[in-house]
Length: 192
Image: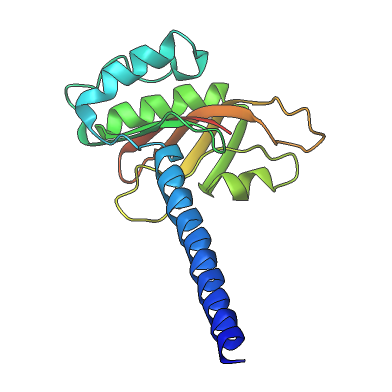
């Protein structure tokens, strides 16, 4: 009897260790693959022109972005993610310009915008009646993902390319967000 009892204990220990190995192994594999599948977000402003030129050949949605970072621009921030299998891509540049230039840009883009919002983010805008997805505030100085209400979000175009029957399941949008008080403009493009 002692021998069968020892065999049972040994079997339980082996099964327990085997289960622990499977669970632990799958945890480490999942972590390894999830890190490698999450795209890097580029924030290095020296790569702006390279990224824009790379995108412009395939994507009309960045033609409204400046060719290069304006020489007189201050507090420049960029955020670029090429996307992944699960998530879309985005590109933003935020610059501080003179109040005169911001006023001109606001008038220019307001006249051609298809949709206009005040503050918020893509989730807020897409859920409004006749709303469209926009973007999150990727170039914010804080971890806030919404534009403050001082920003006018001007959508130059938004296209729903989804075929799943869900509105805005797959598509893209692009435009600008302008804060006249802070004298800032954010050029954005987003695909989801």
